Structure formats: C-alpha cells, structure tokens
Image (cartoon, rainbow, N blue to C red; front, side, top):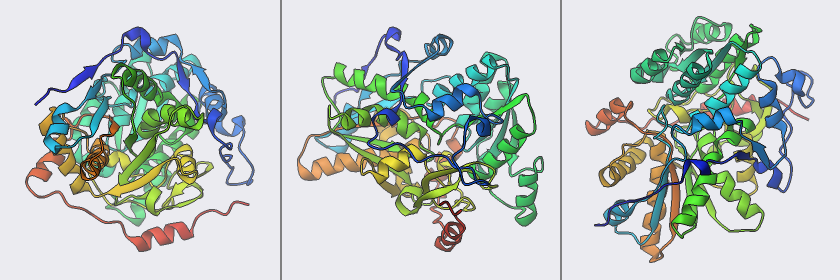
Length: 453
C-alpha cells in the first residue's frame, strides 16, 4: 500500500491577495437590504458593527484585494498548508479515484478559521477598536478569534451556542487560555437572550441566536465591533488563500480536480477552497464539478428557500438574499455545531442558484462513519464538520469505482477533531443519534420571512 504524498509550497508562495469571486459572476449579488426602509444598506448603516475595511471589502467587485503584510506575516506560522494525495484511503476504498485533501488543521487553532480571524482583528487594531464581540458554534471560530485577539491586543467576547458550550469544554478552555471571555448562548446578558430563555429555558441555542447576542453587545459600545466567522462576503474572501494554494499544489501533483467537495454551514470553508476554482470555470479556463455537503438536520441548501431573510434569530441584522430555513428556526442539536445555521452565505447561495454548485445532505452518523474510515487510512481525526466533506468525497470515490472511472477528487479537511473526542466516544459506544429537523417548524419559520419588494 502506497503512503500518502504531501505537496508543500514555500512560504513565499503564500498568496499576496485574496480572490473576490464577485468579479467573475455573470450577474452582481443581490443588494443587502435595510429591514426598516426596504432600501439597500450603505456603509453608514454597517459602520456601528464592522470596520470600514471590512465594509469596503464586503461591497467590492475587484478581483484581487491585497493582503496586508502584518497578516501575511502571521499566516507564515502555518501557511501554506499542506495538500495530500490520499493513496492509503484510495487503497482502503479500492477505488480508481485520485483523492486529494487540503489540510487546514495545521493552524494554531486547528482549523481554517484563523485565515479571516487574523485579518479582521488586524483591521480592528488599525482602526483603534479595543473589543470584538462574536458568536461561535462548535468553538472553532471563537478559538481562532481569541488567538487573533491575543496577537493584536484586543478583548474578545464570545457567545458560544449552548449545546456546544456543554459538549466541547476544551474549545471553551482554548478561548479562555488566550484571554477571551466565553458565555453560553442564549444568555441572560442580552435582551435577546433573556427573551429566548423566558420562552424556552432549556434552549440548546443556535448560531442565529448567538449572532443576535453578539450584535446586540457590539451595537451598544463605541469601542466594540462585531466579527463574524462565516456567511459574509469579506469573510469568504479571506478564506480564498486556501483555494489559491490548492491550485498551485495541484500543479505540483501534475493533476487537476474533476470534482471538489466541501462541507457547508455558513459557507466560509466551502468558499475558501472552491471559489478560486469556480472563478477559473466562470472565466472558461478549466471546468470542474463542485459539491456542497450540508447536515441533513439543517439543510438550508437542499430544503431551504432562496429569499431575503435576517442573518440572526433576533432579527437585528440587515436582510440578505440566501438559502434559508427561516431565521426563527433552531436546528436540532448535533456535534457538528459549526454547521447549525439557518442560512447559507449569499455568494454560495447565488452560485447554487446559478447551477455552479450541487448541494447534497447527509446524516450525522453516516458522516462519522466516513470520518472514522478516513482516520484509519490517513491518521488524522477530522472535526465533526469536516466529516461532511469526507463523506461527500467518499461518495464520489465510490461512484468512480462503480463507473470504472479514474477522476481527481479534492476536498478541504477544514479542521482536526482532537477537541471533539466526546463525539467520537458517543459514536464508538453507539450513542450518536440522528435528530431529524421538524418540517413543521421550518414551515412556520419560512412563513415568517420578511417581505422585500
């Protein structure tokens, strides 16, 4: 059995600019709308929450946006991340597929999230901001922003989705070790949290709820900005260092992906890997199939509606056009807490609507089955979120076997699972359960979508 092969770039090949897919779209993204006026929002509307640098990147249509050197200097600590040819996994599956994975678990926080956390913290420091409030699902984002805050001397306040706060104490410990304050969400610290707890004292929370709490905190203080780890254009932009490096590494492998698979919750990991490749396809340079894998109990792309909706449960954010299950929908609990979001990034949603991305959904247990298969072959235990990408890649690999075709499959192993051992203990003991979403709850949430002319 051949060992897996690693393709490594020199640190001088860290991208010097982020790639903005808006420049290559056949039509511009739908505008972000003000829920009160029904008109597109402007920079002044967003200024209470975001740095001006983030706002300008959010609305930019430039293809390349320079990465500040202080950000690239920190990137050098783990970038370029390695890309592997998974020969051992191919042999274990007895497939003619050529399987590659980009591994973002080598970052100090163990995931792809620092790619944008470092950038957002840098821009806050440059604009004289002292504090950042944010949400986190499984804790990967909160850990990354805590790390970035320590690099730039910023206070970080994190609202962590309650079910993950209880399931993943070590991610909470990571945040606190780097100086962040971490609260379970919903909390009694905000008006939004108090209202939700009054209605449901046992609420497991959701990313939508945690976003509402973090936004409320940021809006009340002049020294504080809000930072999001996914969904928004500028966040997806920062992650494109992953795909740009992967293009170069596939050249080293003398290969090119026929299909790219990514897990999707809010969309940042998926976009980071796929957008540079999709851009090449949109420019008619090279074709590729792109598959987005989401959890079956929170299927915004496969079961949601493409419409304007709030990005948070408390309905404090502007309206964005995205695939959504409704902002009031609270997904069932799962160990893939980073994917429990009611909506999908507007840019990812638009690409699905344009037919450039194929969405699919799998259950929690079948994704863990895939993750364990991968770990036994490749020696890396994936994060529960990353297991969805692994599952999608394995499905494509077995399709190659059934059809007798040798195709190149690329996916992003967006983080390690070494702080998620309770999930694997539940899996090994047969306690890991699939909790289907309530279709009636989704129907009610979608019935309450805001009206946009």
